Image (cartoon, rainbow, N blue to C red):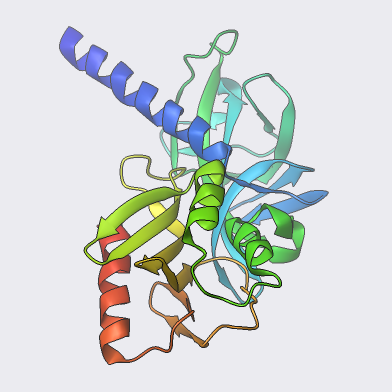
Length: 252
């Protein structure tokens, strides 16, 4: 039993570390935002960090990590009750639960001075206009390409990816940089955006967030796992190779 307890402590520590790391790369609430799922409503205050992806019909799927007092936790049903206040680890207010909210996960907090609190992860829909556009990962890429006419741009763009926390993988002649979302599943993170080079040439951007604009693009296409933006003219072989790279990132 002691081994199991130590193992659970290790698992929780890994989850917390991943959540903290992912918050650095999160999107910011603009003034205030409302997060909804099928059974609940909660509100978030200005500049709260969420992980937002899968833009559709004007809204994103967003994930927030917070602390809630144990008096407002229903562990049996894995939900937080109405009127609960959401805090960060410093006990700054992040928002409030308006209607009882079903959670993705929860666990007793091990943080200093938070022994009476649970850490919770909640997801739901949020309107795109309630998030700061500049806080999305592809906004950096869009700004990078402003006024550029193409050509070999790999080195300065890779430097920008490293500063923003994008992660690199190699796929033969392709090099992919991924902006990963570790909030909902730290061990098997999904991606928010992928930027793929072939050699030193920009090849394709795959994005689950805001629209990407660059006048030199060779086209775009909505596919199963995101919007594809092409820096080279696509053909069937091109699309199959990009699909295979995207598939490698999916949390199966």
